[in-house]
Figure 1 (cartoon, one colour):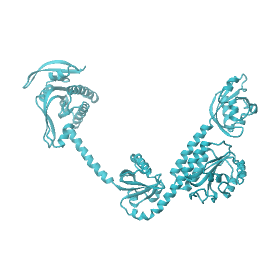
Figure 2 (cartoon, rainbow, N blue to C red; figure 1 turned 135 degrees about the horizontal axis):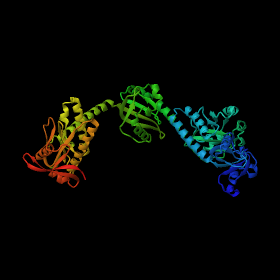
Figure 3 (spheres, rainbow, N blue to C red; figure 1 turned 180 degrees about the vertical axis):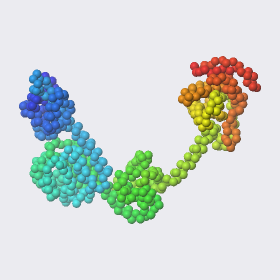
Figure 4 (cartoon, rainbow, N blue to C red; figure 1 turned 90 degrees about the vertical axis):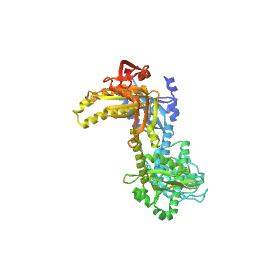
Length: 633
């Protein structure tokens, strides 16, 4: 058992039911810095900071004989360094109830916690810098965000000016640093420390702020009370503050200020954290320089305001985060927002959702220096209407940094509405023409070409609804039209699905052709498929509408003449013996059956089932052998 305990990589403790340590492994000794002798017979609270969290939870689980998994608990090492440990605990059964031992297995997740804290801090700072409007607004938020996200207790801003924003060139030895902003957690009592801090000044090289100022690099002090800062070491210790770090707010060679943070905990140097806050210092400096440039830009452009205000075009100026710096009178009148409302808005708040992603991409491209020609965008007015603008945007750069984009737009809403109305009328004309004529015919017709064709090989279907006329006397005209429309709409869908062309319908008769236009080799197969589908459609219609209709279908394959006649009414029709014979196949067919000629039979006999009917008399053609189409093989 001792060998197993020793070999476990995670920290292991065994305590009695009162929490006194009975056994530890080497991993636990190494993690917390105690020897085995220093831990044995000591309460587990020696290493646990959150005793009020862990111990009650263990007792509750022990009562129900359940294991406790991955409870995250703040602990302390021998040197009082804070560690976050994920404990799994279980009860070791004993014969006498109530005397059970408890097994603790802990895994150090401090590094993971620090990674998560750094990630959330970086995200929070980026968000604050993108949403804030002024330097005085952003600094307190950054101090608070760094403290809260990283778990530190107090943050300060030191600068040689009345407030941060005035840069000091080079390594100025004449700078006098003063604290101009403090944020502290409510869990510490630091009134005396703050009072001294407000009255303290540092010169370059003196104290933590002065050392960071002259080094231009982040700095970590494990215990400020032992670091020799005679001015604030004692009040820091009295406030319970120990570890400190700070970083410069630096833009290239220009330093604008220093941020310093304190913690009650003794914390080892965190190189990754120092690297991150160095980057944050650069971000803050860039924000400050950008705000300075924006302010200068607004001031320099004041003299052009009258000219812009009286322009008919819509003019806007927004900063790098999309917040409005200026819009002219025409812009306000077109969108309906007041000046006060505009100054609290972001341009992307009022861009129509369908255009937002594209406008964001264009905006970032302009900020990166790319020149973009004419752009279109849709804005939402105050009363919820959508207007369309077209114009040009460009970006102003100061010392290589983008500070504002300027746009001059025209309102093209009316023009687009007119163009849409014209397009809609054209589409209606196209749709009407396609309803009258096949697509392959309507195109040359629009080009004023004559439409006459002698087509060598097509298949024609005639269908007649049986029983419709008998029911006409007992129905109203509206009922009859609705029934017929339902049936023919189904036939039209089948025609479209099978890529065929409806030529016409007269009363309750229906005519379809396969093989023109467009030309296709399998026209007979397509017509046969549709004929079978029409039978199924009629049966389904009868079931759904409580009717007793039947369908009689005739099919013939041969040559036809196709043409558009009567250009005023745009009628497309077919002529020839093929049409007459197909019509005879339907007229002399059997109710509920599909009758085809021998030509059609020869085209389909290898793919469909037929029953020979025999010969029928066709006027002008004599006797013709016919077949009944039964189904598909």
